[in-house]
Structures are given as C-alpha cells and as structure tokens.
Amino acid sequence: MVETLALAGLAAVAWGSSDFVAGICARRIPIRTVLIGSKVAGMLFAVVFLALRPWPLPTGNRLILMAAAAGAIGIPAMGLLYRAMRDGSLTVVAPVAAGAALVPVGWGIFQGSIPGLATAVGAVAALAGITLASWPVTTNRSADPGGDGSLLVRVTSRRVSALCATGAALGFGTYFVLLHEAAPDDPYAATGYARIAGGLAALLLLVLWRPSRGVASGDRGRPAWSLASGDRGRPALVWLLPVVVGVLDTVADGAFAFSAAAGTIGTAAILASMYPAVTVLLNTTVLRERLPHIHLVGVLTALLAVACLAQ
Image (tube, rainbow, N blue to C red):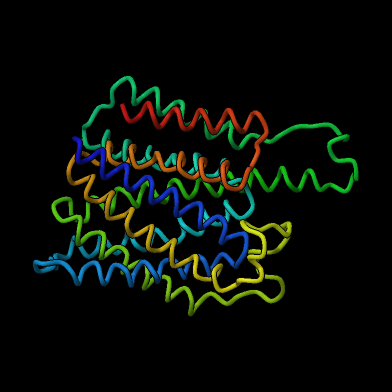
C-alpha cells in the first residue's frame, strides 16, 4: 500500500506540474503546437525509457491494442484540456478534469468492486464541485460598464471551458482504464507503448491538421500577460515548454501504471487525481490568480471529494 501511495503521489505531482506548464503554453502558442510537441517529446522519452529496459519487451496482441487505444484517446483528451486551460481558469479547469477518477471507480464497480461510504460521498462531492466550479457568474450591468457584452463573452468562455474540462475528464478516465488493462503485470511496457502510440497519432495529426490563417490560437482574444517579464523576448524558452510537458506526462503515466499494478486501479486513479492540488497551488502562488467565490467553493469541494475518495 505504501508503494501505491508513493507512486500515485509522484504521478499527481508530475501531472499537476505538467498541467500548469501546459496552461502557460496554451495561452502563449497555438494549442496544436502544445499538443503535438508534448506528445512527440513524450514518445521520444518513452523510446529511451524502453531501451533501458533490462529484459525483453512483451508483444501480446492485447497489450499492443490496449496501449495503442490508450495513447490514441489521450490525444482528444489532452486537446480538450488545453482548450479549457487556454480560455478558462487553470484553478477551475484542473479540479473539473480530476473527475476522471470517477471512470476507474465505475469500472471497478462494473467488475464487482463495491465502493465504501467514503467513496460514495466523494463521488457525489466531485459532481457538486464540478457543477459549482462551472456555474455561470451572474452580475449586474455595473460589472460591465462598457455595455459591450465583454462580460457575457467571459462568462460563456468559462462555461465552454468547463465543458471541455469535463470531456477531458471522461477521456483521461478511459485512458486510466485502458492503460491498466493493457498490462496489469507489466506497467513498464504498457506506459512505453501508450506514449509511442500517442506520439505516432500526434505526428499523423500534424500531417492532417492544417493551421488556420491569421492570429495564433494561443494569442486570440488573450491579454498580453506573461509568466515572467520579458518572456516575449525569449521565445525559444516558450517553445521548449511542450517538451517539458511531454516528459512530465510520461513520468506521471509510468508512476500511475506502476501504482495501479502495485494496488488497485481505483485507488491509484483516485490518489493520482490529487494532481489538481498541485496545479492550483502553482497557479495561485506563481500567477496570483483569483476566483469568484462560487468557483472557489467548487474548487475546494472538488479537492475535498478527491480526498474522500482516497480514504
């Protein structure tokens, strides 16, 4: 159990840090660049990861198909997450996306594992947190003094962002299940194969996805802000950040796969889903982001739900 906790905790830290860096990237450069760059970087890291394996790689059809499916479904899930982080608050998006833990829990129930009281309470609290975190903020006209509808645009953007985060949660939850089912006895190979499949899918996406003309999606409608003063003068650093995202994601995937193999997939997924706490902590301390009160309550409720699910 200690091994499961430690590995799931490592996955949470790596995923939370990855989401924070990805959120910065998605607001600075086109989403497709972040998505494809991180996936390809993760694939290359996984190749090295597998090359260092001291024993032969398994080649079973089930392993390859399940891992490939996990890697492929990670593409739309990550795309939805980056879209949500680009147009919404990282502090809101992260806990909503953490609802992914409910999918492995549901899968466990389907396989005959009945959840306890804490798990049931946590599931209800998670749904409540997601609802509050995505609730539209009503206000009077004085909050939109220009009367140009900019307030409505911001509220609508938050709701779309929350919907994208919910879609990402479903995708990531399915990813958790597929990654575990690919090779419950060989998480090393499952992680590597899934990352390679995701990288190949990203390269295919690069060939098929033609960028639209005009303003880069990362800058459209966004204020001219930066993590650190002068980062526009150091574009090379910004364009290298997707590589950091890919490496962190690969580390997190590996830690999760080993955690699930050491314990149960439901426990591993729930504990690893504590990653929003890392994202929220980084976002509030580094970027000094503030939230409307109802969204803050939703965020705290979602984090509390994950803690309940971990009992």
